[in-house]
Image (cartoon, rainbow, N blue to C red; front, side):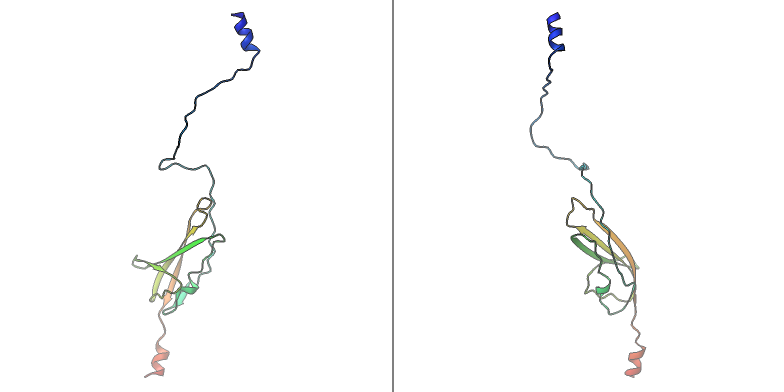
Length: 132
């Protein structure tokens, strides 16, 4: 007994634990340990345009990182329309939404920005005076 105590007291103890070898995957709802950033949308929006004008001056947001924007316009009655720079909206009140999806989805979160837009009806009184 004295020999065993003396041996363990003066030697290095190595502990070997069995490990499982194989492939593992994370289930739904699992999170990864890396941190993601939220890009900032810069948007110089013309809040009022005239009926007949395209949305080129409206769909011009940027995020400072690579990615893509998808724009929608929500009408006063709640309908959502996909829009682009070539879109012409009829007169009315809209909420324009810019959805940004970063190219580096592992490092950045998608972001959304919204802004009001008024499309004014054309003033046809000048045309009426020119063409009675």
